[in-house]
Length: 397
View 1: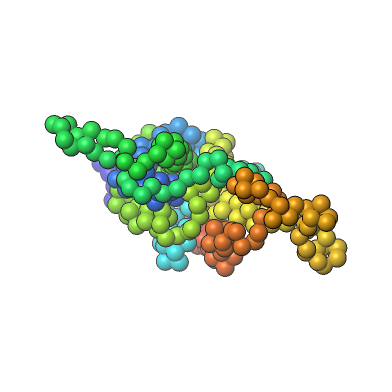
View 2: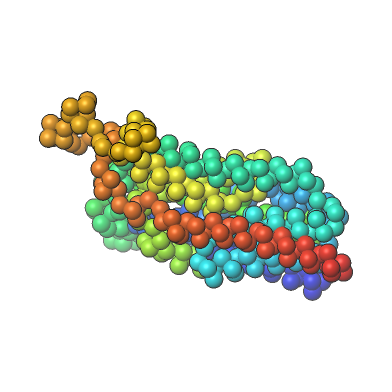
């Protein structure tokens, strides 16, 4: 028979998973929905399936780390597990109030670490390994996307330009007894290839989200032994799916149409790099934030694209002489008037691209970035401090 406290714990775990589904679906399938490749209903179905697959496979390693390696399983009493889940849910509430995607993984680890410090049971070697990756992963995400933005993005955009279709990507022919799906009349072969790519990357992002986030909802209860690994993954996967079919509709609108003016190609690059990084860390059992990595990818990609307007030698000239001056025909540059019509259609080389050819909305907002980073630091810190105070001065928990 289930105790009242366990029922509360399961409800809180489901609440955490529900919110994860609501926020992660927009991140994974916002570009696909915004470009009219798939509907919100299809995005929710794909999110549910691939998030469960990610949790069922790679996500088990993260559950093991958070459910018994940071703090021994003996310290995960049922009351302690419910309290930790409460702190995770509180972090989601704070992030929603501020309109900033919180790092659920970092907050969960912070709450567990607070329990470990208060009881003197924390494994500092494991904790140090996790924190070191928290420092390395965002830096790696930034520089990988910065290199792509500076050296590869214009060529990728030239070769694989992805635009929003004027009409529906998939239409139904209802002339027969059984409706038959077919591509819309305005969809070109290039749109078809781009649409398949958008959907595939969205599924990959959903897999990564499930691999990294399932543990946030169930690790304390698994560590307590109240539920098995498979039961917990099914619970979290179901809750994520419920969030994808309900509250994710707003996040899909926000990410797909309102939140950023990133070109579809830029959004897909951010998804591939951040999802690959988080999937790799999840395989290693490291709980890491998909939101943090994705945001650092956006910043890195924007910074890399912005720096294409100057060469390294020009940047060095600014540092030494304090003058920027671009290349001219006299000092080895190519005059714009000398470019042929064919040359104008190719990608401008580094130093030839004009600063006003990239709008600020396609890069990143420094003020908004500062707000996001502040919340990333604040929510895990608050969770750790509150958890420590609770378990230190309320030992009955």
